[in-house]
Amino acid sequence: MKDLFIKRFLFYKELAEKTFDQVSEEQLFWKYNEESNSIATLVKHISGNMLSRWTNFLTEDGEKNWRNRDSEFENDIHSKSEMMEIWNKGWQVLLEALNQIKDENWYDTILIRGEKHSILDAVLRQFAHYPYHIGQIIYIGKMLKNEDWKTLSIAKNHSETFNIEKFKSQDSSEIQENSSPVCYAKSDEVRDDYKI
Image (cartoon, rainbow, N blue to C red; front, side, top):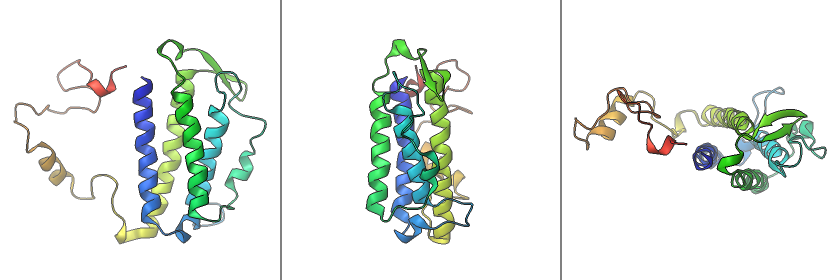
């Protein structure tokens, strides 16, 4: 299960980084209004959360006394390289923490702000949190680039073309009708990359 979570976290990391690559350095610091966050500020918050939640997560509360969450929303990063250093530091801590998890301790108890969570619940909590903010990063990128945006998934109005290309090399008997990303259609078999 750990490998599946790592794979999915890295998928969202890559989406954010593809957005960073599309916008200019100046655009990393743009924000729609005073109540909004820039891409760089969202990076700072995601990383700050990762550092707090996953540093010594098995033995310490996930809300560290050294964390200053409010300062994570101050737009005070000055360059893309500084932003990337902050980004990579958070991801390094998260990935090292995930690699500490063993099959037998997914249901062990850890604390976040004094609240008990199983390790599985804590991972799921952050798996909802980080992609939420990465979606904001992508949305800001799309607004800024407008017609110059290079899609990170299936291009708008091109789903049918994508599916034709995806399936044209397969024999029609191999294509699973209404298959989900997790299970094959008309089957209880779970796809290999989703097995726990």
